[in-house]
View 1 (cartoon, rainbow, N blue to C red):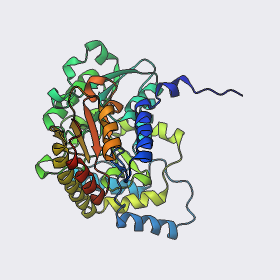
View 2 (cartoon, rainbow, N blue to C red):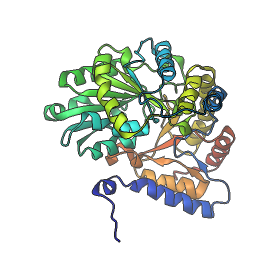
View 3 (tube, rainbow, N blue to C red):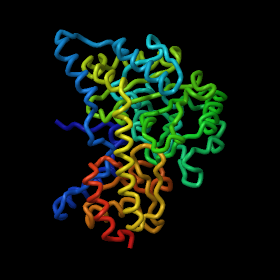
View 4 (tube, helix red, strand yellow):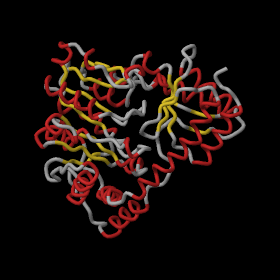
Length: 394
């Protein structure tokens, strides 16, 4: 029997990442030492002990648990509400304005199901998190990419969005601190986006998964909900994956005014049966503790201090690193990002993500590499030594 992939699946095939995977496999065969992987943003540091112990305790004390609540257990929603108020000074009602998610990726993908019909437009930052695009394609929406250009400090130019597109748009994604550019949004920029979306009846969705990943206290990110009009215009996404090194736990949340959040909650109840109470309890433990978050920031700072000077010695002279655990590294205009990634793999045994794999339009990603600071400090030191031995851009 012949079974073919749907046109939708064909439209989202990760061709650029597949090319990098092939290059890595080839490098593993030929390079004599361990490949040090700065490609995928998956933290290698352990989840905090407070989260692990809370999850184990839940599993041991309550083996009789049945299906969890669709919106998350009350303990989880209370913990989220308390953390959000402590961190951002904004109180969200745990009974109507917070819902648990299976991490961020699935939630990002399914969100358009709640607000977007076929032919509606979705405004998407470019380069950006791929599920913004794959979720939009699933709805057969019109994809409108907002370039995050270096000359515009990696903010979208709202004035480039035509009135026709603005009228057709139902949803805008906003992601700061930004993956991959590392940019942290100013309050002025966030206010301009809020005003634009309010004027055009566009739901503004702020993906704040990296809000706790900053390096200077004066750069501490604000939330969309700290800005006038934000609560009445948008939703905010959060995840424990990056804040607490809990990628394996698949736990996050979405928060917003009840009337704005309700359609998303309806979609969730039809697609899954809630997140495990064990994982929710682990998240409650993680949200109660800030010490591990500060330690995490210090570890990433050490890795930055090791890798950035080494990259400069290797010939990469412009490196962006405001927030997140990424470095957004510019390469010479004569080279493509995929070519440089292959050189790093074959000559130094170092893997990174080519910017073109994260972008929908070549001009915003082709001249950059993304390094995720996820290898151990020891491996980061090894990578730095390898980079210092050779000017890779020659």
